[in-house]
Amino acid sequence: MDILQDISLQSVTRQDRDREKKHEEKKREEKEREEKERQKKQRQTAFYLSFLIKDSKGQKEEEERKRKEEQKRKEEEEEEKRSYIRTLRATANSLVNSDRPEIDPVDIVPNDNGDPRMDLSRQLNKFFAQSCLSKPSMNVVFFSKKRWKEISNNYTLRTEVFNILKLDVALHAYLVSSRSGWHYVSSNEQYSFMIKDYLYMLAWTFDRTTLATRAIFTARDDYEGQSSLKGQDGRFNLPGLRVMHLYHPLSLACICLADFAFYFDNLIVDEGYRIGDIERDTGHGLWVEEKTNAPAPELPKLMNASRDIAKIIVIFANLFKSVEVANTIVDSLQHDDSWEKWYKKCRKDTKSLMHFDQCNTSFRPAIELLRLRIKTIKQSGQVIDERAKAQSTVVGDLIRREDAAAGYRLAEATKKDSSDMKVIAIMTMLFLPATFFAALFAIPTLDWHQENVITENFRIYLAFALPTTFVIFVTWDLLNEHKIFKLIHKIYQWLDKNETKKESHDSQRKRSSGESMV
Image (cartoon, rainbow, N blue to C red; front, side):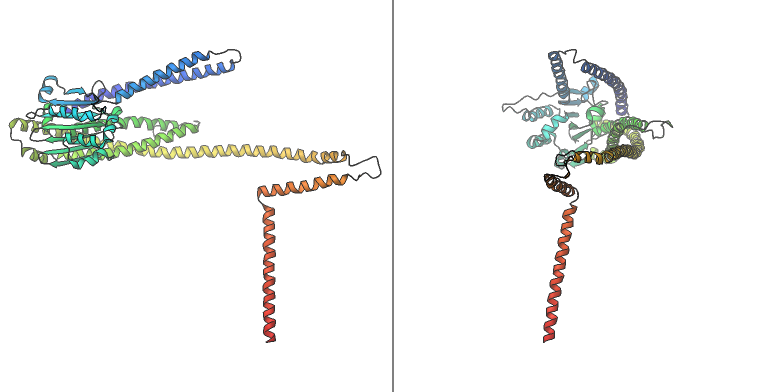
């Protein structure tokens, strides 16, 4: 139980620290939001007073440049923190004397050809060569996500790292793929193991003749924010490691299983709060206070809730997959009889057998506790997943209701516009006849002072007015539904049909007259 207690203590402390950090971040976000609102009001005021007050454009540009430089510097620092390689060596002496393994950074120095990646194999060979063959040891190389991506894309370097690690060839395909799972393969005097999940990928070999563990630990998407396998500096470490763990091939599996359980716990808590916030925003949920006159949530808030729900559903789909991986690890750890037979075939010395038995005795209650804990986590995850799916339906209904309300408002606005257009049309109809006749009587081609009011030039007016009116109506008809064209086409078809009938009738009459003559 020592390993579980140590990881539990560090994880609980880390959880408290993370909660305080989230609380502080929330306060900071609120302050930033208030500051943005204040700056927005100031910009609005400056805009209205821009005709009276001339702003210093050069000073603003200088402040913007400094802000961008500071932001770029912070991003580079964060990127540097996420991009590193570390080695961890644990021996009986280091764990007894300092109660912690030796951890050192690896500096990748360019070789003669200027390629820093090829120098890595030389340093790893040197690191593993320093392990003592006569004493148990655990040697782990940690790669950040960025560093491992560089290595995995280089086939030659990747193969060389695997060979240095002495991994079985059967696991190579799983290491470079995106498939999660728990795998182990036996070969000669050693076992090769691999755990791959959304937190990290861990592959190691355990040699029962030398009691040497060679491991490679590569961070994945959720490691930085969720894993408890870190030290005080926030970088890779193996908390709770003891001397007896060096004698067991599945010590790293047990450590990872405990880390998975705490990762699942944090995920349940965080996503539970998030789905609770969504339930409060939508007003639909078991623990939401009933408000009769509560206003409906706005459409932007509903869209954000829809995105969050989609993320939560995907997160819990991945969680259930990870739970199955954890259950397979539990099954392997609980079958300690097979590991004991394999181990004792080669090891006959009392010291190694004593530590192996101590490790098995420590693992049994911890594994049973973790098994029950993971089972409870899965049940809690199913509840939150169902809540998320229920909220997905609620948000969809609310969005449809908002769309219907928007459609109703649009219909009302259209109806009002139609009424306004009707008034305009009525007013036009009222004044159009009088306007027309006033314009007609005012044209010079009508001379009201003579007996013949209509002069000879009046036909020029008609020659322009009537064809233009006809052209306008025809154009309007063609631009809308081509009714005239369709009518002409129908007339043409009718005439063609009648012509065909007439020709058929004539030919039939000629044929009948010929037959009568015969």
